[in-house]
Image (cartoon, rainbow, N blue to C red; front, side, top):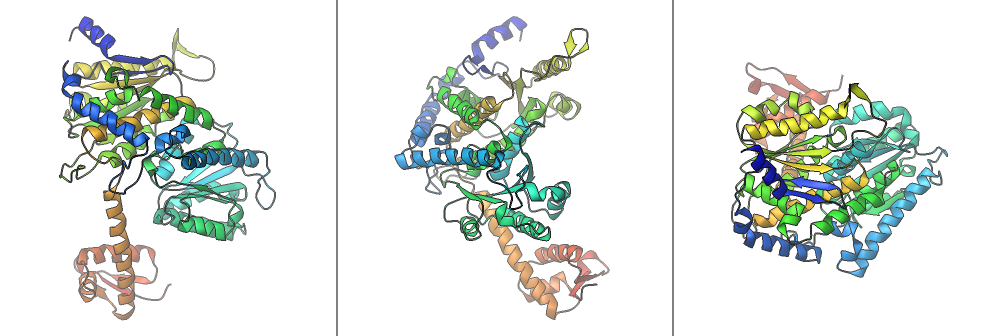
Length: 527
C-alpha cells in the first residue's frame, strides 16, 4: 500500500483519547471497509451484555455469579448499597493499614518496623501484584516485595536465601479466595516453619486476603493474625488486581492506589461509549476477532517497548487465555475457543523471535505498546542529538514498518508515561476487550473449568501417592507395574510417582532393572 494511502488509513483508524493522552492505532490491520458493518449485530449484543454485567446480572452462568471487577474502581456502579459500602470500606482499611505500617504504628513484636513484604499467592493472586511492582517500583519505595507464586520447594528456598536475614522486618500477605489453594497453603506452611526456626511469631507478621468464612479466614482469625481483608466471590483471580489482592501490596509499597483506580475508571467510562469507532476496547476485541477469524486462528504477540512492562505479556496470558480458552460456548456447543498470547519486550525481542515474525510462519498478529516518556531523570545523549530512548522509539517504529512490509499486521497502543494512572487504564482496556470478545464469540469469559479439572486430577494423584507409599511399606522391591496392579492404579502414574519419591525421600530405595520400567522400589530406613 502506498505511503499516502497508509497515511489516509492512519487518519481514519487512529483513535486518540486526549483526556487520557492514550491512543490506539489499528490502521495496520487489514480488515475490509465493511467489517464493522458486518459485525454490527454481534457488536450490539456485546454492548448489551456489558451493560447487563455492570448492572449486576449473572454474567458467569456456570458458577451463577455476578462479575463485578468494574465496580472496584467505581463503587457507585455496584448493584446494592451494601456492596458499594463494602468496596469503599475495604479501600479505606487498606490505606489506613498501610499508613500505620509506614508510620510504625504497626510493627513486628520486637518493635522493629516492617521494611519488606512477602506475598504468597498463585495465578491472579500473584501476577497482578507482580506486574504492578515491576511497572511502578523504585529503590525509594518504603517497602520492597518478594513473591511465592508456585509450590516449587527450590523456588521457596531461593526467595528465603535472599531474605533470610530480613524476616524479622517482613510482613507476609497470604492470598487465597477459598483458603484451600494448595500452592498458596504450601508456601504459607513453609514460611510459618521458617519463622519458627528464627523464633519469630508468624501471626505477628501475617495478613490474609481471602473470602469471608474461608479456611484461611478462620485460620487467620484463630491465630490472631495482624489483619484480614476480603476477596469477593464476584471477582475472578485474573481480574482481582484492583481489589485487596492488588491494592494492599500497592499501598504498602507506597504506590498511588487512588490514581491506579482512577485510571481504570476513566478507561471504563471511555469504553462504555456505544460508538465503535470511539471505543478502544471494542476496537481491540474486533481486531482480535478479525485476525483470528473469530476462532483464535492467530496468536497475539504483545511487545511493550518498556522494561517496566516486561511482565505485561505474562499478565495478559492469564487474562486472555484463561478467559477465552473454552471448550464450549454459552449454548453448550463445542467450539474450542481461545487466543494464544506470548511476548516479552522491545527491543529485546528484535534480537530473539522477531526474525520469525518477519520471515516465518504467518500465524500471529502483533500489539506494540509504546511509552512515550523515556525516563524520569534528565535527558542523556548517546550520540549527537540522539538518546537511548530515541533508539527505542526508532526500533518500535522500524519493526512495525518492517513487519507490515512482509504482510504482518499489528496494533499499536501508546501511553504518555509509566505511572499508576496509565497502568490502571491499560489493564482496564484489556479487561473490557476480553469481556467484549467473549460476547462476540458467545462464550463465558469468567469461569475456568479447565483449571478446576487440573486441580481435581492433582488431588487424585496425591491420594494415590499415599496408597503407593503404604504399599511400599509391606511389599519390598516391587516394580511400578506390580505396585500399580496391586492397588488397581495406572502403572504410568505410579512409575513417575515412584521416581519422584526416590529423588526426594531418602527412605525410598531404587534398585535399577534391565530396563527403566523394570526398576524396583522399596521403603527402607533413612541413611
